[in-house]
Image 1 (cartoon, one colour):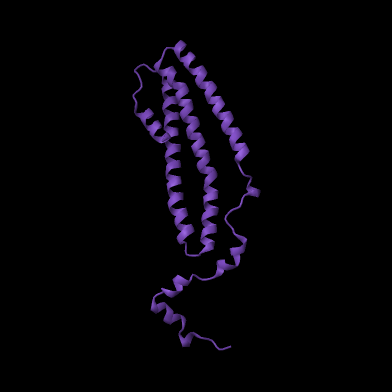
Image 2: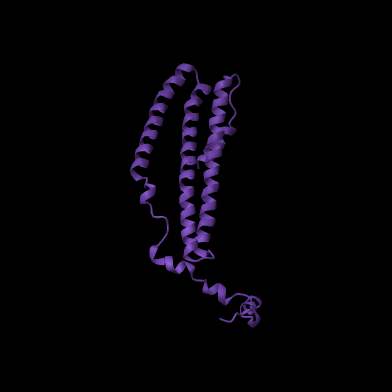
Length: 179
């Protein structure tokens, strides 16, 4: 959604005679917003598709589930940081936008409430993240202790449906050693 907002914002032409510094700052913040949010969209899509696939259909049973959960946990912090940076860029580009489209006095009147809301959003996001973020040492990462002994058991479906050529090679009497 935010990527769509940023795309609409970046495709809108700026008025002639805009100060070069404001134009560069506005376009850079909007482009960074679009980039961060597209990265978030792609990362979330890949995590949903491949993480779920590995957890449910992985070749190593419960070990695949644990690996999927651990990898999703590793990606979580990066994706959330990209999301927050995209929102900060989006809000800051809207703080700069009135200076491009309006006279300075009008832009100042518009920017003051925008900055107040921006600071309030940053404060509440930090407060909520601080209260809800789970420390690394208290997090459960998908390892179910009771299933640990079963992680080394071979998948029965894989064994039953293995091609006969491979099964014959497994039971070749010439390869057997005497004890």
